[in-house]
Length: 446
Image (cartoon, rainbow, N blue to C red):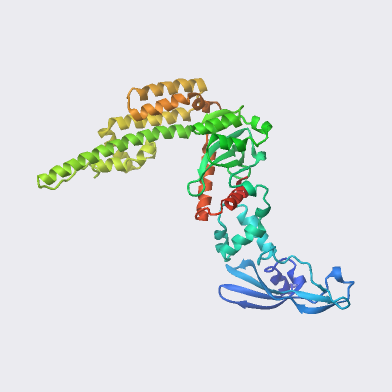
């Protein structure tokens, strides 16, 4: 078989914008260590659209330098000289109408489009990360993307994005309402659709603030027909969220997120642990004071695992959030000691687990009602203030808590989306330009 002759022009074309060598001659290159420089001059070939005119070459426009795709982890700069032609009769100047450079940038159109579609518009990364990866200046790429590569300046919600933005086509039967902080603790109410699964089509609305009247004023801009189609709204126990759901989605069933319910019980359990910890600290301070008066050194007693009672209460925090089968060996030993010293912590710990088990079983709503009532009775028997507050809260939201057992919908998707926003926000190292940040959020999730 005859060996194919090597065409170096074909090889070179792989590293340059498509079709470039049809119009330009490769004149020089330089290996600068961290980057390459390719020099190109436009051929003296009169553009076809001007072939009927008496044109003559009049040299080149000033050389420009643009950035193209990196090669072997090195930046590639193209030094380009574009030719100009002059009409011998009129003296008018002509040039080839070829989109070499992305509008308003010093990046090739192909490279700019690649960065926009492959990275910036579809990945939760800051522009700085993309710039560092491609060996570009982050401020340069940020400005190019914001002002030219993206559609930010022509975005139809730009004028009010920092106050509200909404996307009616993302409304579905099952939605969630939650809140998040963007910058300087400024809270936004977020309405998301479960059908989006935390990706494109997830965001229905983002509205500055959490006040029910303000949020409703903007949510009511969504088409009434679409709002009436919403069947289920998952949310937390905040009164403002309840009002928003009732006014804006009147035909939807409100479902209190199970994790907020369980979290309430866990917080009460931790409050009991902290209460004992303060008591122990107070007692320890008294013992130290007494030892000083008696001119002796105070040595606190230790348990078999080496913990003092104060350390025991501090170090038990995380094991109380976990089920026994998830404990490490040291946590199991510590739990045994803790429960031996504080029987009420033990009882409330297992009552917290029982609440989770009620939620985990596929109970009918009426069966769940009975199970929860029996559980309430067990908690009430202890007559502890912090747990009494939990029971009262449960009673006030009883129907909406029980609605979980009809469709078993939770706010987990909304909480996960909230975590994504926080992670994405962290890549910005703070949000200085809220509108631009929200534009990026819109491109990724709306």
